[in-house]
Length: 373
Ligand SMILES: Cc1cc2nc3c(=O)[nH]c(=O)nc-3n(C[C@H](O)[C@H](O)[C@H](O)COP(=O)(O)OP(=O)(O)OC[C@H]3O[C@@H](n4cnc5c(N)ncnc54)[C@H](O)[C@@H]3O)c2cc1C
Image (cartoon, rainbow, N blue to C red; front, side, top):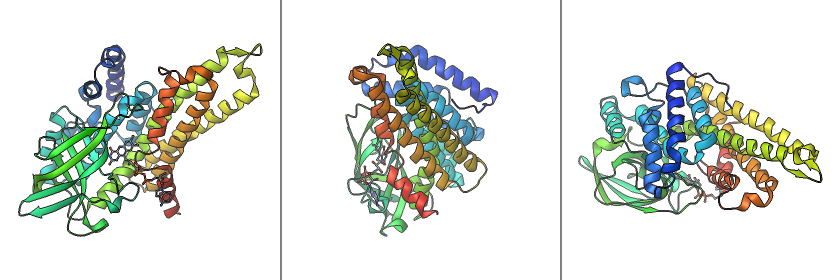
């Protein structure tokens, strides 16, 4: 686990939050999916973790990225399935803070915080996946209004968010035409369809459609044509925290494997006593340490205002690949126990597969790293 020491207030908040998660989780897990995701989010909301990175003047906890990474890793150890809801909200708040004009920033951050609901980030479309410049959702300006039409096919917090952070094309095509908008859940013409994704047990995922949604131009975030820059900033800054989430959950998986290998006997010896078992475990322990250092390095660079894009992609690529490798090994190590529906390893393995896509696939991370060499 991360050895970063948190400031007293943050440590206290995290400790109290984990206590509440521990005491409430068995009740929350029995709720239907949407209520379940919101109930977990309300615990994070209560401890202000949704505004973890925001300055106190905006009601936040003023955490550095380094501290945020340590918190995410710790929460991911047991509550990885609840984190997509929280992480998306943290990222959206960070974007509003960085890109909203000064006079709008305060009321927007207050508006989104006070709803007690998470935020959603809407980018991916049927045609526009890894290639974000080919998205087709349109945002057409008419006087002080903006008309939005299109469909985002896979969005975390679809149907439970208070505001939807939407990337759309204005009159120009390609990067120069991309803009960002914040759309309230109450807007006429917005609709949601839930996707059943078993690996997302305590978070909600689905599509979001915009059918002649009209918003006031004050909901545009950033200058005209700044959508691409805003987007890359969001994805870049999100990656170290996604990596921290993978590291925390992967550590959980490895601990299950080690415990099993040290208690399960076959051929009159503990599995751990066979080098065919203990050597891969030693390798995973080493890679996990490296993954932790990678995300911590990217966080440190963000905190020091140094270039961090390459390091953020390296951290995400390495941690999400490792998470899959450890849980694939775990599925094998636990034998028949791993395929039973209630198996924790199965849940971790399913979750690992979804983390490969969030904030860009493995190949997209390699493209970014290669482009900076
Ligand atoms: C669980 C989950 C949650 C998500 N949440 C959100 C969300 O909240 N909001 C949102 O907007 N999106 C979200 N996404 C979408 C995610 O960002 C996309 O899945 C991702 O960007 C990849 O797009 P795609 O799935 O269309 O794959 P594609 O872009 O079609 O890629 C398919 C494969 O081809 C590879 N590939 C593509 N281009 C190249 C290339 N040039 N060279 C080499 N390989 C290439 C990719 O790496 C991938 O392996 C989520 C996805 C998942 C799985």
